[in-house]
Amino acid sequence: MILALLKESVLFAWGALVANKLRTFLSLLGITIGIFAIITVFTIVDSLERNIRGSVQSLGDNVVYVMKWPWTFGPDYPWWKYMNRPVPAYKELAELQRKLKGADAMGFRIGARKTLKHLNNTVENGIVSGWSFGYGQVKTFDIAEGRYFREDEAEGGYNVAILGSTIAEGLFPNNEYPIGKTIKVAGRSCKVIGVFNKEGESMLGNSMDNQAVVPYNFARLFMDVKSENSDPFIAVKAREGVSNMQLKDELTGVMRSIRGLKPLADDNFALNETNLLSKNFDSLFDIVGIAGAIIGGFSILVGGFGIANIMFVSVRERTNLIGIQKSLGAKNYFILTQFLFEAVFLSLMGGIIGLLLIYLLTFLARGAIDMEITLTRSNIILGLTISVLIGIISGFIPAYGASQLDPVEAIRTN
Image (cartoon, rainbow, N blue to C red; front, side):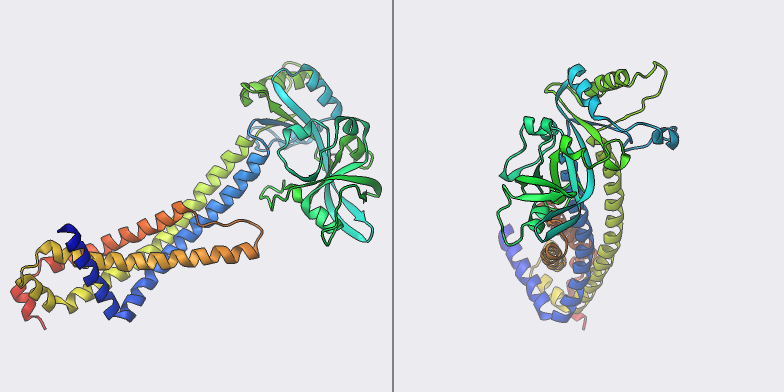
């Protein structure tokens, strides 16, 4: 009986919507715009968050970075104290390797923008990174072709390079095979031994696509390793079973010992980890999400008023028919369900159209920007749920009013 009532209510509501196409379209428009606005904001925010968190995770959630500057600044620490700090030095890596017990791997990295050439092909301002051998055990990456450099190549400063996909495409167009070819890095000859797998754009700028990696002992021949512009740092990966907090505590003691700091002296180095970035981004995404919800909420509110208004008109137009139905034995709940379903269908159809527009927008965005924007299942469910709720809330009062009409008075209404 319930299914029969449901079917009859659906058919009746559908017939009423089809019979008033222009009115239905105008009502759909408000909900469509509302769902489009709010779910578009959530989709973009989710995509940005996914991209940024992916970039942060590539740094390693169990890695601590020894650097000059912290990723977050305390309110009680003057900037000039940071300015006077020394940059991490390669010789400190050897001391850490000898003294640190809680580390599984560690490495040193510097980088600068240089010109790379192969025959007549040139890549200007390419990022050239100098890695110690151990940094390859800390950093997350995939090699599509070739190999990573050996430990003897790293220690001996061999002139070998691993290219990012964008750098490789610039130096070797038309699918030319790069492995074994000789290129010029900052005017010095260098043999290509590998190509990194394409990663795509990173919100933190740490994608391997635009980088060429060479051994540190080769990079120091054409980079100023003592300059802050080379962004030198030491990355330390925690041993299994050792937390980042434990690793940072041990690192602090060892680094203070290496730099000969007195017991009461402040640290002249920063220990950074990815959760510092994650915390900052969490608050940012919360603010953006709330702002998007408020903006989309107003759009949804306007659409809801539109549906309520249309439903009041619909009840008014069909008052005579309601009286006939009730005189033939239709119960109040049937009249209520009939109009409530009409409001829900109207709202749900508007929501589906809004979601389809967003889905189309994600395809257009992929061709325009180098970032994956995806309409997730959770956002689809959220959009449909909001549509149904708006339909119920907007349609309940008109539907309830229709169900309470006196059949005799309703029939007399013109």
